[in-house]
Length: 225
Image (cartoon, rainbow, N blue to C red; front, side, top):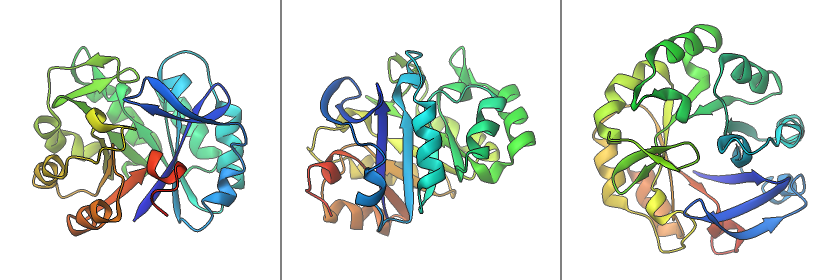
């Protein structure tokens, strides 16, 4: 299944190359709900909140309330209270990345509190990887751990994983299917793949691995309908 991504920055829906260079910016964010109306699931990511450079909370709430699709929200969810607030807006699940780690290690105390309050089934853990290592804080900080090293331990705190191959994010060069195959062997939990996905062939290959495909750039450029 293809999951469209709506990444928010400065009140607009944007697409960035490697999470840094802006290539696209769309002012009519709510209009994207009509554009993506045929998809059953959406990802909404507040990039400003992820980078501690502001918040697009108002837009996130509007998208959650107006969408006919199920919405999963990430970006800047660092507290249990914030997770509960986003779920109250109507999000199906919250996507937690940076907050799952502290001082380069799994932040068990936070994750236990989160699961106790909102339930494991409503949590997606994001394991975004650059050059094989997990990156956090808006992909600006690289940890020493690899995703396959922590996935078995993290599985108790989530219903699934979102794994982004940052090396190819927004590049339209295609993704790394071999990397996703390796991840598939690490956990039985559902995995949504992201990062550079540009073709139906890749989507089908990921489906054969039992993975959904979160897609941004290829959808916005009309390369993948």
